[in-house]
Length: 305
Length: 270
Image 1 (cartoon, chains in turn orange, cyan):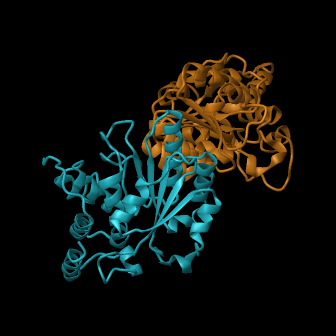
Image 2: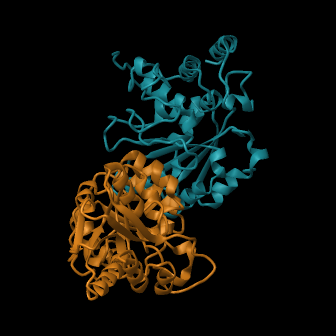
């Protein structure tokens, strides 16, 4: 998604001279297409994320559309107050681009994991939160939202190969995309973990268990209308996200179920304990935390018993 | 609704409004506002080029020490940018004028209130002006206590690296912060050497001498490829003897008797 995002941004910047890209000294082998094509509109602001956001606000007030790029945890958490009192308070079109959701940075450890980035961004009413599921959706989501008037947070995955079957890059702001049909179970997911969900559901399909998978790419504003329509058909709903279970997709769905009086039971799959002390690959950590294809199959099968 | 009218910009008028409105609203931060009254008088009276409040080519002003906003509100009123009625709504329910300034008010370019934030926005505004080929300048008034914040030094380093000579920081060097003197809380000395070491063009001035502040800022060379900092030596609570250099006037409000004495004292320094 990272490369597709920067490639698309570079294309947009060609036609829109107000787009600038700032990085917190990250993006090696990713950001070069933009950097090489628009050296005057590319700023490596160094390992100083608070200042990077402040600078972006000063530029946005003057008419620029600054994209600020870093690893999700660094892009959102270190400068969080600057984001709140900057792009959000001033309603300016600063775009925060955080790479890596959940365990995508594998052995790099907790400092590099996106565990609560969506949660902290989603609670800000004026912040649009976009979480593409694959590189095709990253491209269409950026094309559809780069020129929104207010601030946007994009959480983009590292992978540029895998596509989520059935999604075919569809994106519409505030809407949900359903990629499989099924009556046995509703699985709602978001972001790069959607590929694992699709694979798990495909495995169950061959066992005769049919699940509907719905992909949420707009976490804020919440896609209430679409989710209400989908949720009301299923007594049992599972949410899957590579994020702490509190604050993200599972919480969003629970809020809608509770507030709309929908008679569905929610099971939230996500990260439930702090991933500390034992290193490992993304695949290993996903498995440890119940987010691998295999562990999701087991969870869904258990729920359908 | 009263119509905004331009008045003569003087330090005395700014101080008078600070005392009147803080008394009316029973709100503190009086000493911090009095500290920058002369700096604000120089900038808004003599320096800032603002052909129109929404003119993209206007100079930008950021009060990074947002808690002293009343001094700026006074200047906005004296400039004729806000009405007397608006000024006198300070800190009332539904007012556009809170303790800390918000960009939704005419004449306020950026919202502030969290210390250590303003200079970064100023650096971005300065970079934007340069990319747009504009000669507009960006002025940021910071407190000395803000120099505690690491984020401020991120902006200091960034501005020097990008040679943002259209960025002018004025440090209100009154030696005080919320709970004590800066030398006791987190010593900043030697402050001028710190800014110089980061690559800024350094100037030191009496922050209560409007002409000296005006002359110093007017003479800054915006072609020299360095951002500029004016270290303005000030007295916290300047002009009111019982407030000067007294920590409690960061927060305290005036009794009727104190108000009368304060109003009398500032009339003698005009």
